[in-house]
Image 1 (cartoon, helix red, strand yellow):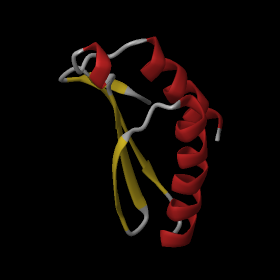
Image 2 (image 1 turned 135 degrees about the vertical axis):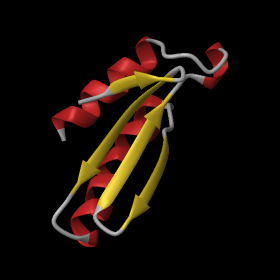
Image 3 (image 1 turned 60 degrees about the vertical axis):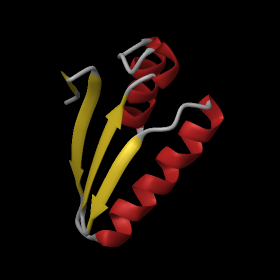
Image 4 (image 1 turned 90 degrees about the vertical axis):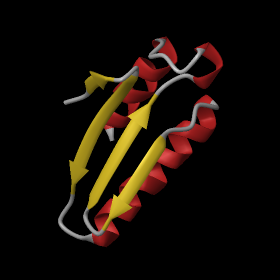
Length: 75
């Protein structure tokens, strides 16, 4: 579940292993590139943390962030 914290949508994902986490990140990267809206993220082994905020809107959560979050949820 996404949470809104400090003007960002934040969600942590856990996978069985690094390969699954990396595959997920690849799919997210393709979505983000298509949307021209790129997340802040980190990956440590099987964990991926994603933070979404719209820099052009003064680092606040906008419809762009919510739309990308919904697309990520569909992966």
